[in-house]
Image (cartoon, rainbow, N blue to C red; front, side, top):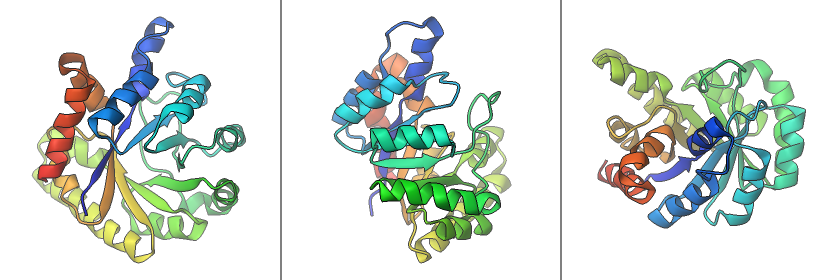
Length: 243
């Protein structure tokens, strides 16, 4: 099974919002990335609207031809927005107002009852549901219990270990993601992974059997500043395919 790539366009919006103007446009970035070969477009609509705006999601819904994955916190406001916009998929993530980026996986096990109701509403509106979790047995079992269709494993700890040059920690994280991918698929869950993945560290994760798709944002956007979005996407796809 070949691993697919989805691009997160949040960081295009971050650049735009630094000046509060109209450019660069995350919708344009998504179009170029699709033409370059990505399998999906991801955007995280935060409650504080620090980067992606409501309008962006509505425009993406009308233009994305692959798959639109809307990342949201499990709140009533976001539930209403998602059911109105009808993305192809919703990924539920934790959200802290002061964080620079998502700091960890959603604790599905601790919030199972509430999440089960939230997910039921999304699925009744024909929206597939993923949960962004740590690669841990308890969280995988909880994801199955609450009715998720997908899990997205947080690769953040793996990425940090790679940056620090901690070989033992890198091996530990790869083993955990590999083992939890097997468990998730055993439960009938489909598996994505992402967070902190870049051109230097993606190959080992792309080589894990059973992972269907990798979500990458900041690294591709950063690379695109120097080589353009199309080339940045194709370079990442080449690394994934070689893995």
